[in-house]
Amino acid sequence: MPVFDRVSLAATYLAGATVTYWLVVFAYRVLLHPLNKYPGPFVAKLTEGYAGFYAGLQRLHLVTQRNHQKYGNVVRIAPNRLVFNSAQALHDIYDNDRVVKSHVYLVTLGFTGTINVFSVIDRIAHRSKRKLIGAGVSERAMREFEHTMVGQINIFLKQIVESSRKSEAVNMSTRCKRLTMDVIGLLAFGYPMNTQTEERYRTLHGGIEASNAHNNILMQWPRLQSRAIAYPLHYLTLAAQKQAFELIENMIKTRTAEDKDARRDLYAQVADQLETNPEFRLSDIWSEALFLIPAGGDTTAAGISALLFYLTRHPECYRRLEQEIRTTFSSSSEIHGGPQLSNCQYLRACIDEALRISSPVNGTLWRELAADDDGSRPFIVDGNVIPKGVQVGVNIYTLHHNPEYFPDPYVFKPERWLSGDEAEKRRMKDAFAPFQIGYRGCAGKPMAYLETSLVIAKLLWYFDFESAPGEAGQVGGGKIGDQTGRHRPGEFQMYDVFASGHDGPTLVFMPRGSHWQELFA
Image (cartoon, rainbow, N blue to C red; front, top):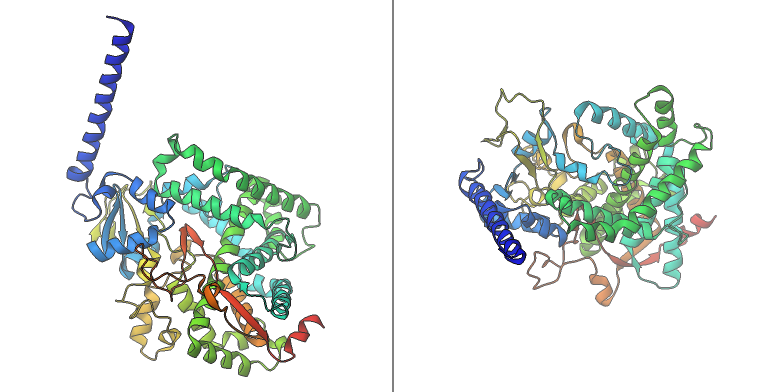
């Protein structure tokens, strides 16, 4: 037989074997798989590529919600994954010592190859890393760091004064990202990135978002990591990841050249661990810093931007919050962490309501039974027995818009959090998870609330503000007629890149009397 014919025959057999293999795999997934009884999109039962595709479009959270509306509270979103939409499932999964992060988190290891508090799966290792990070973002640490944080907020406010003098409309996503990036850089390693005042590191914001989007696709479609199609995704974000790594390396070198007690920052806590705990290496610090910058910066910026969006579209809420701030405090110097700020109940209600409608992390955080679980007890999620090896999760966006827990879920209504009905408040709190729950809950929650509270309170103290006129004032909202789930002009749009990409709102500021002059005194 000629060589060409032999090659052609071999190719034919190979193609036939490949097709047969996938037909058998697909038939098993549809007909015989332990999850075959659960409803969901047909394509999702066949391949993880369904979720990976929509993750690439940055709207997996919207597609997941649509599937819940069609199929119910339990949806098979991938061959080996179930996503739930109930408060019971939220607690069964995330407040459960038998459950660990899914192995797909390992795709986020990135340049350092070092596991950090985000990607660590082992529970004991997580506790160790969580303790390390938690020391730097605890309420006590925030009290010590607040003066530095306020210094960056004052720069933010001064720049808004300058914009108001020029009658410039201000894109608050851009400004808030720069503010929170500078704050987290100082908190982690006392390093002044100065993105508010200098161009040097401003491209880092887009780079981190691109890297997050890349990782999110791989987390939804992990098999893609071993396919040739993954290489273009990798190289699209390579430059951004390299820049981020170089920045972190520079931050660490600068900080380690100083005495460890020179600043009250995270490094002061970490340095002791390096000296006394042989398990910690310098690369661990790099890895934790790479996690802290997007986790502590981008998510807080998203929350602040969302709240400003909703306040400018709900005048009655704006006026009530404005009154609370301007009657609680008699001077700007009183606006700081403490009882007065904590007693601003409507401010906290506004923050929580913005976090509910437009959560900075609106995707599904996948979990599975720990590898060392012997399976002697059934793993039950909202009445469903989950086979070992199956990944489960609750989609935060969907849960936060479930009318069973939040009536009129798309209406910005801070008053719902101040209701006198204790049963209603308990029902909402059980389903409210912008910072996750359980032992994996966000360690930076105190920092996020403090920074957001200070920024909003000081903005309302120094300025009156409103949406910019014309099309600029519509930035951030949905568009009527959109067919992808982004059709609500009154909803601040989040783009699912594991955390959330966002744009706007675009606002116009008017200084309040002569109060702004205090900033330049």
